[in-house]
Image 1 (cartoon, rainbow, N blue to C red):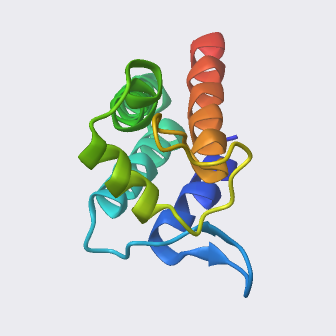
Image 2 (spheres, helix red, strand yellow):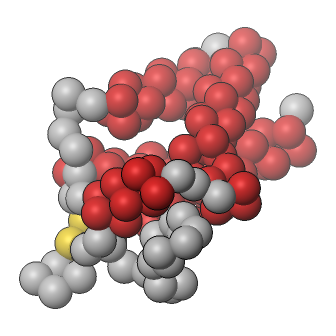
Length: 131
């Protein structure tokens, strides 16, 4: 699951799309997403090299990442978003694949982010189980 998350999240850096569909537009290496990818990669390395400490580091990275994702996406879905936030979010992800159509009144994450959040949460649960 760690490798699946790494490959899935890499789309935020390089873009995963076809001629007609965009799963995610990559933002490149000069971004907060690339920094998060580096943190997560370092967490994976420490997990496998220094397991006793690495598992806690990786868990900390994943929990922090999940909290950030919650406040960037689901918080606005649950509690609502300002008109400016909603307009910016829908504009930013207008070409993304969606399983639930974008809304003019509620922030709805696209398919890429829904899957990303589920994979992060799955990794957190798995690490806790194996602690």
